[in-house]
Image 1 (cartoon, each protein chain N blue to C red):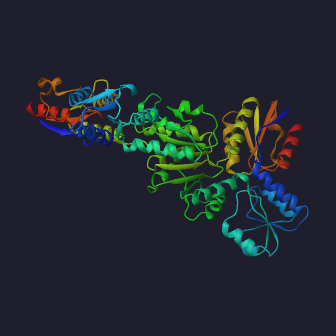
Image 2: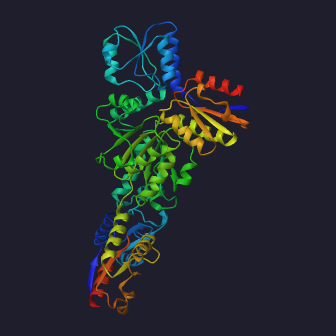
Image 3: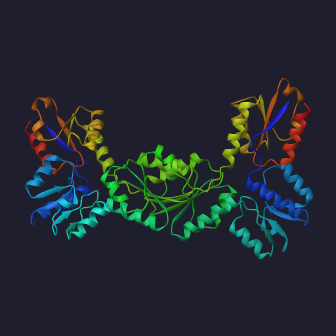
Length: 275
Length: 275
């Protein structure tokens, strides 16, 4: 059976960078704190915990003068300040694309624009970006966009994982009433590239294996997209693979969600090759 | 028979202002030059010519130290400079909304944006606006927008008579590739307000009379919109009205294209009242 990997899969650039920084630091220091899980993958979090990573959710749980890695989607300003007060060493794991959201939001604010963030109000990335701005407005969809007051000028930044279509729908709604709009389209195309690559691969194989957390939204979406094209299964680890399911399959395609570590993907590939 | 006028009809603010300036000047000076017809209505142009207005299409046809009124949709930079060299007195008939297009385009250029004008390449308003900018790009539709190079930052101004939907379609296409976009939505809603008012009126009358040049695009559009709702006729002047056509009509609605002077509308109303 031939095993083919999607052109894009698994960790995006920003997550890979944060994970590399954490693994590198764990090789020489212990413990290293992260605020909330660094990525949403339980197997990976457990493995990092074994090596000395400590997940904390409150500032008071961080020891003075310790080492903290900031997550790929950023930390709120108050947390960063609290850490600095504790003389903590902060390793900057924030994705450069997320950093650009912060930078452009601040630029818009200092240029006198009402700052608008297109994104999910409860997402850590959006909460972090909003914490650096005085009066940000967070808009999730075009319905909300239609209801905002008639500002003289607005400046827009975009949560990195937003879909292009949602950005277009919201901007279209805002153009109706607001005469001066600046848009920094800070979305990142990694999610779409991963999805497109999965669908392209599904077209040329007999079956798709999608690897990632059962609760991971982006992994479920990959499964749905592949399932529309070819028979597909969604697994968390190689243990879930059943040899019987691959009878009469000549070519199997592999993709993985944004938080799936490479070693889990490698185990799946090795197992499939034995079938 | 009751005659009801649409809430918005005929001259928009900018055209009315230019016509007032011309009529005022003709009351005390003779001749007054205009570049091309001040408005696209033959009856009005003939009437103004009788009073001493002279339409010219070339700089060489304007006498030194004469008086020229600039049209509502503006004059190209080279023409203005040529007139100044001839020590001509220029009466500024440019619509303030059109002037805003020029002002914002210059602002974008001096702020380092690639300036884009959303509009019709051959329209005098767009040609005038473009003449003040070093390297403007004129985009008519979303197909053209998809083909423009990947500029680092673009700044957009909009021809005043563009439809909101075309602006949205073009901006949506540009957001795909360009990460930094500033939009001055300089379109003017006069055309849409006139259309909406005509349709609203058509709903409550038995028949609509649409007054305007037979070749006037915006008048024909008014006729089409009204015709979808109620029986409608499109006339240039009161002479075309036939009493027989208004048998059994209790309420008649009136609207007029953007270049239809008030005296022509008044004649139609008076004639209808005699039926």
